[in-house]
Length: 232
Image 1 (cartoon, rainbow, N blue to C red):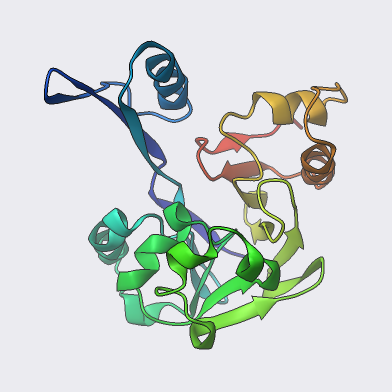
Image 2 (tube, rainbow, N blue to C red):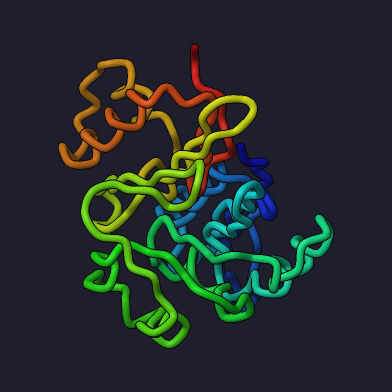
């Protein structure tokens, strides 16, 4: 059994440039911040956004850091670990739901092996993290499912990326699924598909959502959505 801690919760910071000044939108929660960003982008010319994912620590038979986050989160991740009495040297390895920069960039300050699906090496965004994640640092998953560690299985759930995976973690409160960006930027379409409604989404992504719903998880932690409890 594992304890699951969200070290750094997801957040979005949208900004715009007006009269030579940078203004920051006050709403930083996710997915609310994404809605605000889309509204800004429709109304203003120069708009941008920085987004942090949920960074998760798993402690049980292994100690695993999942999705450390952006490069900006290097030291916050290290300090969040220390606040729980964990050093980076205590980690058995880092696991990535997928290898996009906003999930993998903070690996720069967290040494050790990084586990990721081999299909992520062919992702168009691979060059952005190649320096942080050289091949010799990686343990590559292959196929469609397997064991990540005792008490944790992984399943490939394409849609956001070809090599995106979910981690299924056994906890004292039941199954927790770490879904990465397979679900997002909100959970609305996922919940419609999980309830059997055709949400008009990409069929590959919808198939991944149906698979996730079939697992009967007690809790789901997606990349940019606050953790949520599923209906019994």
